[in-house]
Amino acid sequence: MTIRVGDRASRSFVVNAATMRWFQEVAEDTSRIHCDSAFAQARGYRDVVVYGGIMLAHLSHLVGMKIPGPDGTSIGWSVKFHNPLYVDEPAEITLEVANVSAATGVIEGKFSIMAGQKKVATGTTRSVVPRDQLHE
Image 1 (cartoon, rainbow, N blue to C red):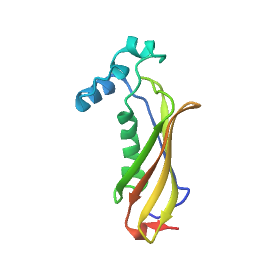
Image 2: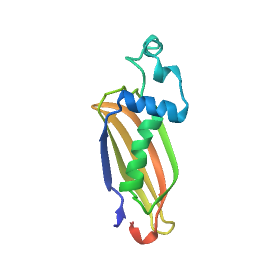
Image 3: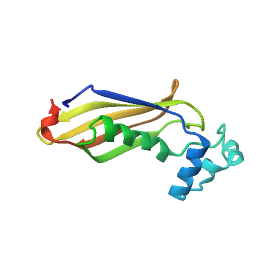
Image 4: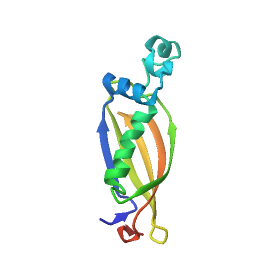
């Protein structure tokens, strides 16, 4: 597989209550914004907010399985959260290759997480891959 600037991969997902409970247990994160509906609503949110770590797990899928895929190694991610994602709210994450360096074997990507027209998060990725998989 040759990786080029402009290559894209997407993944649709919905975070349900069971996934929220699983993540809470695994991460040992009981932050009230993620667990207490009344607390979240008192701060202006519609309900509890989906953990950012769950959303980034979907980014991990795209980076590990699609771009660059199983032969790549992540060397950095940056994320900015813009709006909350709520339990049972459909979302889509899209990753696009923004830069390729055949000399270093590094690809840079940009990603966005959208819930309909609502921008939930944006960010960047950096991965190193075998140089024979790159095309500048």
